[in-house]
Amino acid sequence: MDSNGQPSALSQGANSVLGSPLRLLSGTVTYVAVLFVVSTLGYVHAGWPLGDAAYMVLLTIFSVGYGEVRPIDTTYLRLWTTFTIVLGCTGMIVLTGALVQVFTLFQFRRLLGLDRMASDIERLENHVIICGYGRIGVQLAKALTEARTPFLIVERSAAKAEVSKSHGFLTLIGEATHEDTLRQAGIARARVLATVLPDDAANVFITLSARNLNPAVQIIARGEAPTTESKLFHAGADKVVLPTHIGAERITELILYPATDRVLDEATRMTDVKRQLHDFGLDLEVVQVAAKSALVGETVGEAERRGNGAFFVVQIDRIDGKSIEHPGEDVRIEVGDSILLVVRGSRLSAGAVFNAPARPVRSGRTFLG
Image (cartoon, rainbow, N blue to C red; front, side, top):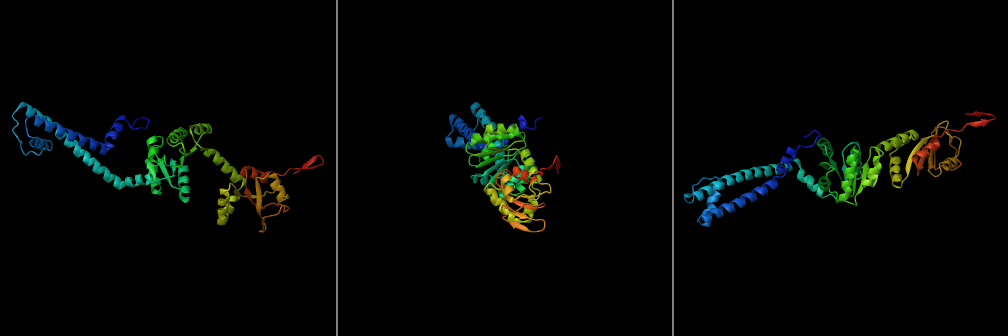
């Protein structure tokens, strides 16, 4: 490895030769076959019958040592036999090594299941390619598994790839910034590519490569810095996700709707309803009315009017245990109410309506809080 953590020129050269035993084997077989023909023709040129010449070459290159078929009694025959011995024996040594490499390769592939993985990838159609098995990649893989959507994880770290495989996910070890890796992942047949590496430069490069290899694939890219968003769109991304912004929005939602997770965790049915509403672009949220909320004492109709269509109230749970389903517009909101909302606009603006403080009441020249 060099100082940048990349394979050295020597290791790359070794991999290019030893990394393809089948290519080495085919090349060596061709070499031995050509040598056999040329050497046989040399003995025929010296006046030997074709059968004797071929048999002599066969005995020589395999180093059997049964003896000379005909006397080697001229300078030409001695030089030609020496030529055949040196080149022929060398070729057989290389051929034997290539055969050992091929057998070893197939044994390892069978042991590690690489053949099965390659065939599984070949069978993928309209699948999702996830580049990176970090925090977001793990969540994506779990969600897609639950949704029964075929996907493939491309991970450059062998350690993370092994973790992914241990979870039962189809995983390809490789650098997603390389076009060959994307081709192995079936980018030409993929429906979506999600590049979620914590490296903006890598995500931009992967987006460029994927868009070049498959103009029709949908690309969802992760960006760390806000300035990267425009670069990703320019590179060909269809959608860009900024985790820092999503995290801030989620924290804000937890501040505005602290009761939502508790209520939904207690009611599985409500969780299913929330999932179904989400398919229609709606959200289910629960907000608790604080003592100083501007909506205390106001009607449901007034609350919905202030929301300007961002939500509508479907249920009110009083602190005394009473529940009002589908409350009318004239029902008044009280302190401590847990109000179930169907949000069809911005969740942040809807929460802001209920969290807005009450305006002070003017009495003469003073204000009463």
